[in-house]
Length: 326
Length: 200
Image 1 (cartoon, each protein chain N blue to C red):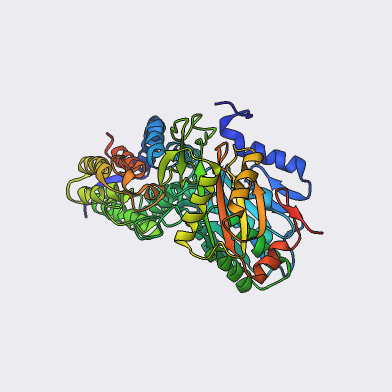
Image 2 (image 1 turned 60 degrees about the vertical axis):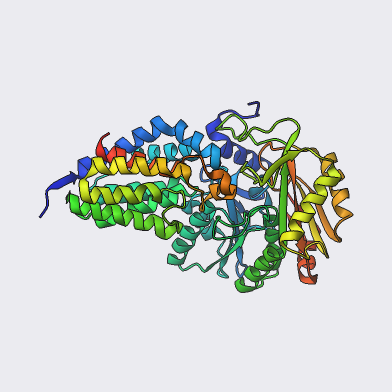
């Protein structure tokens, strides 16, 4: 393992200390692993809290700021945060209009956010939850924990964050988040496995000439392995997998071509060029946003947008990881 | 009234024995979890029970339940993932069921079943889903009929038998049929809890 770390047991807190040093506009608590908007709570605004295991940066701590999240809770690497953190974040952003939890669909995240929502209710804070489950590589059935939350999480956070910024009520902010999730699908292909600081070695063995098709963002193995093919074929297989599971997402689409952490932008743009021939792109975002540490690979997210979703996607945002508009 | 089998000090000993077993077997748990999960089960439980050890040190407990409730609350606060809430809720449920300074085998047996019920309620797993339920369920039944040694053996067998099962809950479920052939890490850590109870 070659990594820029001091101590494998203290990576998350030390990375958050770096985020704090770079972004004085955020309130970062490295010890409790919280990132909160500097001006929170904002009276009358729905607070938006997300969180999850670390290792997916800039998700979620790098997406805190005006127009997006009010707070993020960072768990250990690939491990969900604990209820205490989530309750603390919820309390910190409650401006009297309620709080929205945006939760990726993994057993651990779901259980910890559920417990936190119960505890927040005891403190008379109204909490709604949007569960993100966009990864079509997993069959959504009673035989699995259900589809995983991946790239669409960023679009849900952006769009719901923009609507909350307009002082929309909690029910509407939750509804738009759910709408984005329902209209989104994602699929990922990995060229290498991620190495967690604690394990020190790749999460799975992948021969030099093979790729993991339908991989998860925690190094969960995918649907199958195949020989590495051309970018054109990879783009086609990602688009087909999404459209087969959720037809129609390729029309009027917000397209997130996301790097998993270890793939250069030149390849991501090349891949996006191929994807753009297969779907109708209304908006695009290319880069490393929902990563899996150092995994080489990419995920494609298609969100079948409507005018409201596009308007909110275009609204100004000012976070460490995503910023545009005034 | 039955014979008392656990007092406050023995409850502390049980938790200390779990912490020692988790520490000793952390790498095994992580290895099992790497095969069908995300490879952090050992590290997470080790971190959790280390926090429990600290929390119980100097903690004034009047009942067996106090020790177990404190254990559960600490696991929920410190572990994260799925195992934190699941084990945390199990220990809290057991704690709630044991409200005296000395408990009988019947009371402890009922508490172990309450722990199982908490895991099943929160996680929604059925027997055969390749989870901690597959070790805890036969262990709780064996404890009631035959005591702690039988419970430890039943938990170990339940954990081993998960090898042939296909996961339907948690991260291993994403693998579908490819989860068959691997022992479930959650069922394996449950077996450690029952081995610690039996002092084996």
